[in-house]
Length: 151
Image (tube, rainbow, N blue to C red; front, side, top):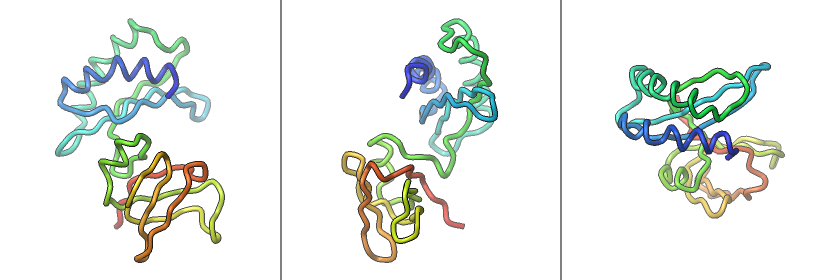
């Protein structure tokens, strides 16, 4: 995590906790020439727009005062989403047994994307079960792992 996102996470976590939510992630990314600061949150029973609005209204003046980002940016507070990316070991632990989509940098047997049940996470290496068999992927080959919602 960058220093900016770490500083923002430290500011945001107490506010998010007080609002009965969980801080999932902080992103500071450039998209189409514009910088975005995103606070992604989760809430037992589901996150509503009112939750996001309350958190945003509380954090906005705190961010202005702390000024962790020298440049202009768009500030957003939103849901981590049903198909959220798993990043930390605790994310993997929380969602063991859940369906995930795993994407690779380079294809294996012609495929860069695999969907299956998350079976284990070991120091960045991920094992999923697909089609009745388990497949282990090495940390350095994994581009991302996210929850997968089947329709």
